[in-house]
Length: 259
DNA sequence: ATGTCCTACACCGTAGGA
Image 1 (spheres, rainbow, N blue to C red):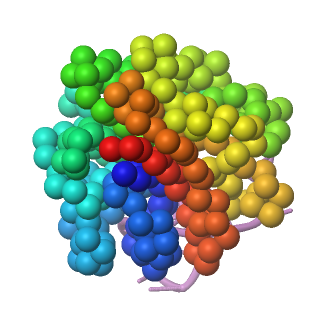
Image 2 (cartoon, chains in turn orange, brown; image 1 turned 45 degrees about the vertical axis):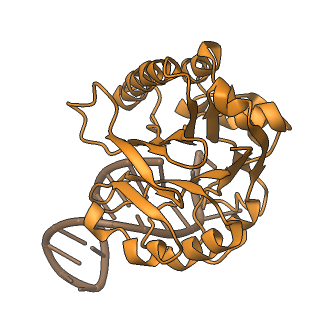
């Protein structure tokens, strides 16, 4: 089973590109972030035509997450526990009913810039809520994949120029620490476990020729519970997507599981 | 650290977010 995470940066603005990538990759489960539309405006018919069931947690203009699955979807959770005061659509979770069920979340973690400031504080508080949910999920002893745009550069070698990121929310020690908490509690970071090379990016800014210079960062991650990590065969980054017409600034990261 | 792109809203430019 192939499970992917992809920040599409508006599903409607680049629908032809999205459909082409989905056709090329033949994924079983796809987690989208930044769909940037309300649920009613999600291009449901076009994607259902490719054989996907779809759940969305959208909002007007900003954020928005979705899960596509070729298998039936059950037990849908919208938002994180403790999100009641939060109007930003950044989390959706569901049980994917393949041969072996796997619980999958699509996560759009706050960017947190400028650092320091209220947006960074919001990011850290959001990470605490995510980590609490992640811990709760471990107690189910299921295969779980927490897939998303974590807006976290885990190590200096996961960017082109660490000096450019020292004052940025994506590389702060607090951000890295809370991301690492997921690993301390028992989640395996898929790319680190199955590849772990440096300078393998999932995001290149639209500005300043970042793509041409390979000035990227690795911020999209697949966090796997022990039951999922045991079945993780390989992780790949579909870099070609960044060179397509009307690309997202992120590319898909794909985990292949023996599930 | 900004050579871009997306969205909305009030209008065919500008602001805000990333």
